Length: 409
Ligand SMILES: Cc1cc2nc3c(=O)[nH]c(=O)nc-3n(C[C@H](O)[C@H](O)[C@H](O)COP(=O)(O)OP(=O)(O)OC[C@H]3O[C@@H](n4cnc5c(N)ncnc54)[C@H](O)[C@@H]3O)c2cc1C
Image (cartoon, rainbow, N blue to C red; front, side):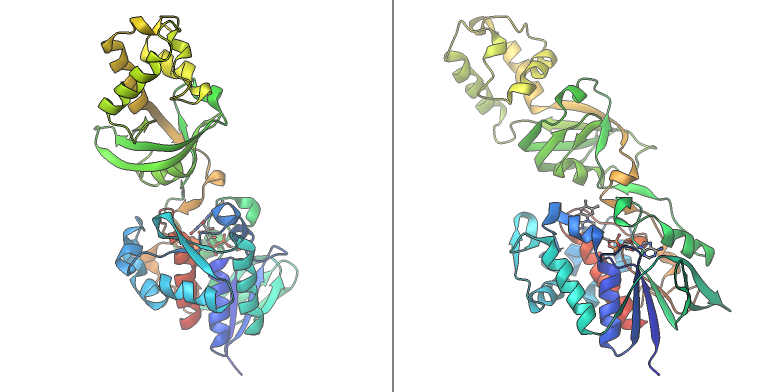
């Protein structure tokens, strides 16, 4: 009789693991509590699914994993980003590469990625079970199977735990896997949000909720004033603070939140240096020298942002532009190039793209993904204490660790 494997969790890591194990001729049951597979995968990349990153080599992949990147050497070498792309193309999903080497389906539909993975499971005869696992069964340091809510005990020779993290809990990642792993003696490292919106101190920010700024630059400074990170792209104001792609990316670099404080500096016109910006402001002023200062910035800045920029500049909004001094222009430029925010914390983990922390990598064999404490127990995906920056790296972690666990179980 072929070896029996149970995979808990039908996200990208669990589906990859199940399909690969079944390809090896093992008898695989994939247990997912949701009616549909890949519920979180469906909402990735704003419904377009940034499926991996087309960076040059494995070193680049590892460089984008700030927590325990080197743990992933074997997993990334065993199933690279190029192989992820080949996999989906061979499953009939053409891919394209966008800015920052981000890879998406040509269709811009994450549904195509989910459907391809589902086909991979069905073609390889994976048995799909819709149920919730309540416990992993183990005896004498070896797994025996699982206990499910509806079906009761199901026995197997190996169990692959791929229940994800704690963010976006509506998709099913409610943290069950941490409890299962802990019950079997594993250490769960500090669970924190990553790639998450930030809360800021400035009380005027909520008034701008919903305002989106494109082509702006954001820099993160730590309490010593050291530049920690800088990025260019889109940012949004929200009632609690700031969000949008560059804010989410920046949050992953504020790694000591709580022990350290961070300030953000927003450059509203990164394409213009101070000289070019001054020339631009003077040109706009020339168009109506008798206008009030408050009516002179409409071509340069979004209308909703103007009152705040004026307030921060300290210039009288009713002053005629022909009497705005060079010094005042310099104050205005300073605000436009360095709009400052004091970060007071992250939004709750529920709103995070990624969970940082998880099953300690010290207790997992990096060459197989097997537990060092319980034989026959394997881990895959976000449940492991690894997390990456944005750009498709987190899904690559899920696919690579899933592939390795499925190959070694
Ligand atoms: C809004 C959003 C957008 C994202 N966009 C991207 C992107 O474009 N690119 C990228 O690389 N990453 C992205 N990510 C991150 C990426 O989605 C995750 O890293 C990835 O889904 C993790 O895969 P996983 O299989 O480990 O876990 P999950 O995808 O969370 O899957 C875990 C599964 O386990 C199931 N499960 C949990 N407990 C049980 C139980 N007790 N019994 C049975 N089943 C259970 C859950 O229902 C769930 O389906 C995004 C995340 C979010 C929230």
